[in-house]
Image 1 (cartoon, helix red, strand yellow):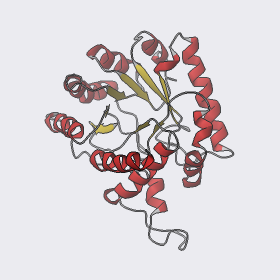
Image 2: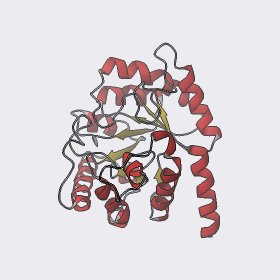
Image 3: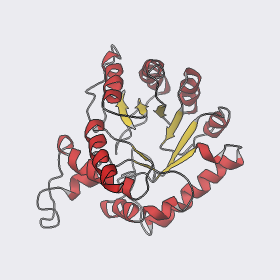
Length: 271
């Protein structure tokens, strides 16, 4: 799954592909990701980095709709990263295939929109608190058990609304209100998440936990300098490979070409 940021304030690319005047660069990025080997495009118009404020509905629609309109003509499944029911309705009407929701359809009306489009997929993600506050007080206790209970109950709510279970994918929400150790525990115990019976999407790409793990003299100095975003490709690929090896079905990544190459080597060695 190749990440397409139609936003000027993404933590990962800082708006490299976004222009408020023209979506041309974002559209070109969609096509480039497909050339690099992406199987799915995931389009998002609102930054969900730690500390990010919510985006007005009209602004998100203005950013996302032109990109989705173009992406659905490219011949691959199109996912839209949104939690607003109005955006879900608009992009599904345009032909989007998947709703990727960090709020796991908890916003009023979201379940009804997805249930009303019987052919769309949905990714349910675990998030502690909300983007604006999620890292000010991360989770405590057994994070894996809490994530499991949340995802199981949320998925059951969709089933109760008449959504076929084959439409559901789960995401543990790496970095969304969790510490470095907690994120690693979710990777170490990924089999526990798979035991719920749904495919798993892993989103480790360029996350700050990787930056801390790879910081200079990590665990030696008290306040290491995190790895800059531009230098996180190698740890991102390593995390993606580990996630796939442990059963993830989809990896959501920024560096598509390099991740595809790494997966080809892993696949060849696994035969």
